[in-house]
Length: 170
Image (cartoon, rainbow, N blue to C red; front, top):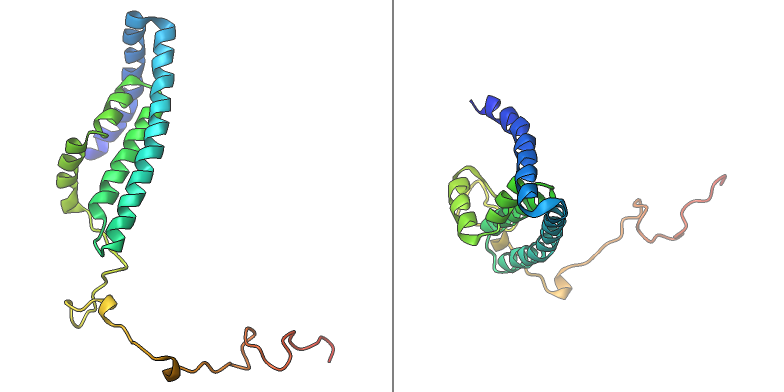
């Protein structure tokens, strides 16, 4: 069922958008229709920029607090899709794009999608032996005198007797 639905939507969407252009064109005229299309593209670009920066700030805040920003990333992805739909010329895609910017609709979609999405975080990896202990708990605290760096003479990055390395032909 899903395999046949996607191509049908892909074929029907341009036809529906053309019909939308004709209907809106009859109501507001050609220049009004063009103005609305240009305006929706500009609004989509502006929303993508403003909301995208807000989502990045929220992801950083969640990460600083040690929380996995799964919901924030999901909402951000929906807003990016909504902004792209606003940028694409067409009134049906504009309506769907605007709907994706409504917070309670995004929360409703997220509740439906969250059961199928797994978000992994590098901050809270659990070890196989003890799932309750995380990698962040495995901290080794050393004093300055407890650690000594010994250069490796065979390493090309170590500062040995000749920092320029061996000379060619010698």
